[in-house]
Amino acid sequence: MSLLPPQILNVIEEFQKLPGIGPKSAERLTFYLLRSQKASPESLGDALQNLRNELKYCNACQMVTLTETCQICADPARDHATILVVEDPLEVVAFEKTSYRGVYHVLHGVLSPIDGMGPEQLKLRELIARMDAGGIKEVIIATNPDVEGDATASYIRSQIGEKARVTRLAHGLPMGADIEFADQVTLREALEGRRNL
Image 1: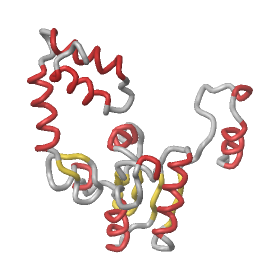
Image 2: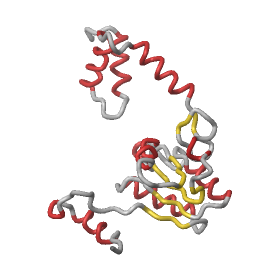
Image 3: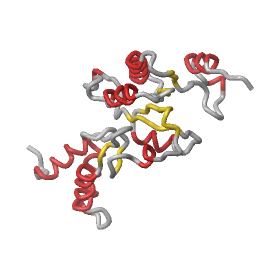
């Protein structure tokens, strides 16, 4: 039997469903909302409700947006023949800080059977539909360089076939890294991804 009312236990339980939030963090967040003058549970609830009700996925790239087509896909100055495939919307934000001028496709995850993420749960059908519509010259796969990201990249490659050139982001040493501390896989990928000076 808990000393805490069920309303508090329910909020703690809901916070624990979020990635990176364990029992202690969930408890701290719950009690912070309960006693805080700055952050109110009502404001948080409204913001979460608006998140679900007002946002859409772009009909082309699956980026979160308020309109049917996001501002990137609607921009005629972008290279619509090049698609950069990313796992999550935050990665679009990161790439927009670079000089990339193509368009995107957001998968909203990676293949991960242990987490119940198969091809049907990802936005892969939409990517293949874009490929079938034609006009795509290159698909750059920018999934994370881990087991799930590599499996997703291989699956996408198999689905695209010869419809377009398929490339993968280079892997290797980050700027400012000491070579002596790099692992073997990173060093091998840095060698394989080398380019002319």
